[in-house]
Image 1 (tube, rainbow, N blue to C red):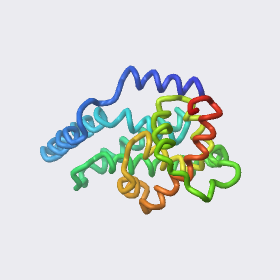
Image 2: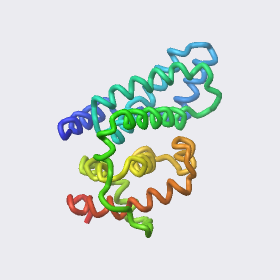
Image 3: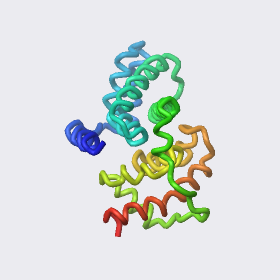
Image 4: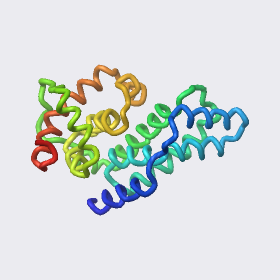
Amino acid sequence: MEASQRTLAQEDRREGTSSVAPHAIDAEALGALMRGERRSALRTLMEGYGVSLYRYCYSILGSRTMTDDVHQSVLLQVYEGLGSFSGDSFRPWLYAIAHNRCMDALKVARRYEKRFSMPGQLPDKADESPSTEERIHAAFASTSLTECLGELKYHVRVAVVLRFQEGFSYEEMGRICRERPETLKMRVARSMPVLRKCLEGKGVLR
């Protein structure tokens, strides 16, 4: 697992993420679709969002093998769905597909359910201290956070990754997960004490 994390981090540094603004990526992909060039549209989307989509799936699944399989199924579904795409922003749509495929993978591999379960219950009282959220947001640059995320239940982990790693608003997260934004906001807030305690134990937060 640790070796896989190091490899993924190295690939991210080598390949990087697209420096092109999302609206420019979307405009180019929409232009290709209008010309009937689905393969060109898919290539544009994967060049712009492919690395971050893979990173998201890996953050949720924690397995390179599962992530590779899910990533391929996401690519196929995106290609098949481009013909009927009617929006003007691809990023939430892409992440909704990735979210659903990750959920399917975890349902099939039930052995991951125990791994993503956290002993006991999350605190009833939410801790939404801005300083805590800012520090955890910054901690995504550390591989230690991956281990701490493993202490969260799957649905909590998804919310935390979408919010802090991918930077979605709660409204966008609601569309991706098909849940109320308020529910997701509370889920993230209740995870803060758990992540803070874990990261403090690893010396990432002080």
